Image (cartoon, rainbow, N blue to C red; front, side, top):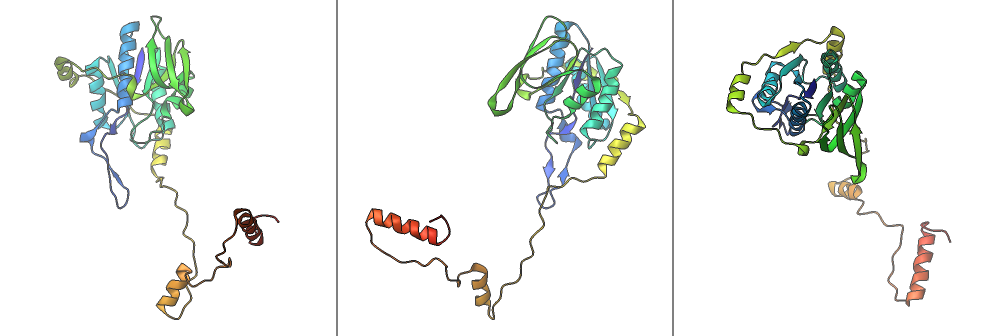
Length: 280
């Protein structure tokens, strides 16, 4: 069986400009371009290797919409893991691995990053949980006639590319530009609304790890402001001058001289040495 991991995420979140609070709306939520490409590659692999495709996601009941779209496109089974959208990547990967562990998985296809966090950590955590090989950040994919064999190019730092080949079970993450999800037929879209969606509740230990992560609010680092003494001065003008240092006299005296270039260069070097910018 082939698995496709599709994350339910708000495609058009609203960010409050005052408090930076992110507001999400289930009506604008769906599947990102990277996850849609992962689903398309899973469907192509299922057709080429004659294997069923399992679509899995983690989220609230509203996430069933993503699974039904996958069923309309050609997935044969849909599973939703009952987890909050704020669950850490390691918790999500553990829950998905539990679902996939009972099935004979040939390959697991994921998007290389999500729209809400963009870390791309779930595929790596999932490969570690399954104990399988991984090929992450793929920009070009070619499916071999042999089941489980994939030849691909992956993105590296500084514009480099790596040619990889995966034989047997493994976790693959693809960029959204690698494929475009096929358009489902009208009949398939209508019948997908009645398709069964299996709901899996994670083990208490997994859910406790998810709930513990929800109590911590991540904020950007802001250094503490320095405490500076107030400006001295009897009048407001004196205090402004103290703040801007406009009344201070420069320790580097200035004078206007007219010299020949060689003599001017020596004069500049002597002045820099006297001010401590260079050794004599």
